[in-house]
Length: 178
Image (cartoon, rainbow, N blue to C red; front, side, top):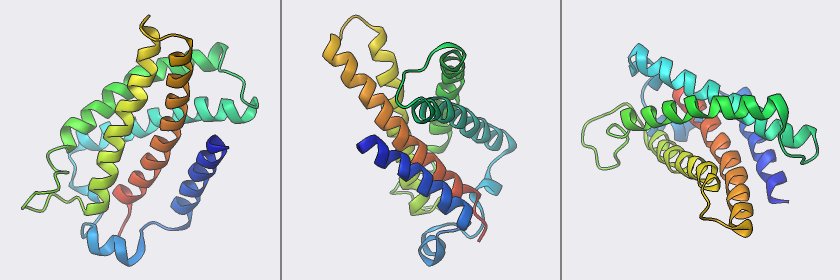
């Protein structure tokens, strides 16, 4: 049931992105004066776009497989694609976190171009990405038993869906035009 609600959340976040390009007055008050993406260097923009593209492939292969096969596990080429795109995603999301962490401090005195909503979504992305990565790597060790493996698998699924929602909302905020 919770997985179904999370999937509905992803669909609602996508619908929000399609329906509007900003968060209204609240977004204008706490957001920057223009789109944040214009304040990035071309390397930062490319890195963020690659991160979003990798996340989209991972979400489509993970969530899409779950939806279209009625909960069957990934196998074959879909699993190979999912496992092949995961390392570039890990590298890119880590680099984005390292590059943006200084600008997303809450106690910053100078204007970094990131509003409060951007900062909250950034830190949610960083924490959720860490949970997703660790819940995918820990099952590869002999430390966890059967119950631990099942718990890590569920943690990976749920945190991945929530990370997808956060990334969709973050992309809307970063690319929105005021």
